[in-house]
Image 1 (tube, one colour):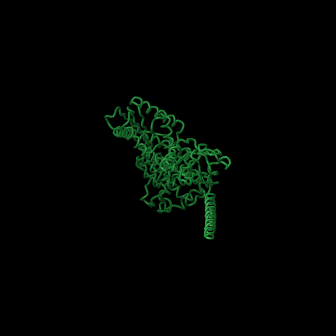
Image 2 (cartoon, one colour; image 1 turned 30 degrees about the horizontal axis):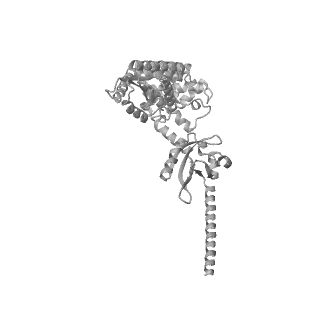
Image 3 (cartoon, one colour; image 1 turned 45 degrees about the horizontal axis):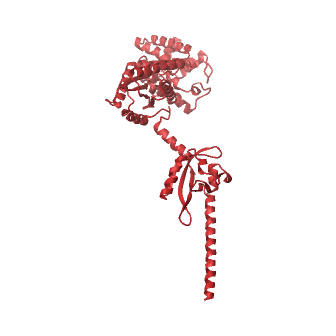
Length: 485
């Protein structure tokens, strides 16, 4: 019996040793796992004081182990009250929880956002003794989410609110007490013409400039949104019609001021204004009324607004060496002489001389590095250069003054043998005015110095015309031109 008792005692001792060793190994493995975790792990007592944490926690919050041990979790949080409720909830229910988007001020001065998991800790008697959990740095995720939220409600180019935000605000204000509410609809005139001729970069520049003009004329409490490609809408809460009209007047004065300082790309804005005095009607109806009035204003301006833009483009073209005034005068005079020589009707002669002045209008949309390149253009540059006939056609088509010669501008680089551009027309299918201008423009180009070639002598230029007669040029008209000069 004694031996059995001794054997049992020895067996129990061995079991305890094994259990203690297993517990020790388990504890060691537990600590090793925590040490290698990328996330921060923490343990605090019920008062919120740190009793254990891993190295990742120290790195995350910017404190050394000595600085953090025994300190209260409140030192990490700008607003510790946001965490008190989740901890209290976990304590009362025993159910683990998570707190997200918690701002932390780190020990090394960084501002980060964290996601904190909270789990109740118990002693051997199942009595709560504190909390533990994982802390993750979600700053990058937070920034990305904020960026997505911003992009979902703002126009990327101008930074203004977009159509989604505008629609939400209309719905919100429709049931508010902000009456009277005035809506101003603004449309940037001629944007398509600028995009088609100078490119979308110039169009974007004009949109941003328009946005800045409008913002300067509105209050911080007003809502300004870009609701379409060229349309902006301002919502002015607690603003009657008289005050709204004063805002429109400020906008027009600011536009004039901008155009005085930026004559190359002037702004023209069509506006419409409507006011909702009370909740008897819908704010959507008010917006539609303002939009209709804006379109009426645009129709009244019509050609005038486009004419202003076209004049600025022609003026810009006049500043380029290739379209110098002396060059245009020579072309005009020679075209008139040839036209009179072959007895062109007055209307055709007028179209020819006008074509001589504006045939290269589309070059205003060609980059300087291509237009003034010293040396031959490569294939890609030629592809861009050839678009100037189409750009010029678009400009002329939008002008009441140039509409009649839009097709002549389009085809002034066609060749007699059909190898020209943009349509590959040949022979008599090329407009007569274009065939005349092609000869005279080529001659004047040859006897004038260019960035990519020396000026030829008159005899050399004449010989070149003869060599290309029947190929590039109408042979009959070459003979007429030579008889003129």
